[in-house]
Structures are given as structure tokens and as C-alpha cells.
Length: 61
View (spheres, rainbow, N blue to C red):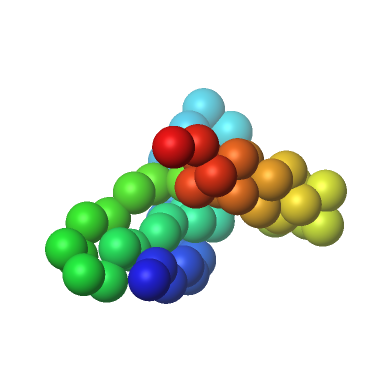
């Protein structure tokens, strides 16, 4: 069983302070954390692609 969530990180760049959303997954049995993606503003298309990526990884034997 896994759980997933976002957190935000503010990063100084040449353009100034930018906020990024970080998506991560935790495997509850082992407490292993995997970084899934980082994006300035998550949208529906990005989330759909992340879901497809996670499902394809889980389906492999």
C-alpha cells in the first residue's frame, strides 16, 4: 500500500523566488519515499501523465 501527497518548496532563481510543488509517494510497509515530480504549477495533464507512469511501473513484474 502506498500514499501520495504534495509539499511546496520555495527556491531562489535568477528570476527571484519561485514556488515549486513536489509530488512524492510513500510505501507504507517500508516507509520508502520516492520523489515523483516537481513542477511550478501542477495541472490536470501533468497529473494524468504521472498517474500513467506510476501505474505502468506497478504493473511490471
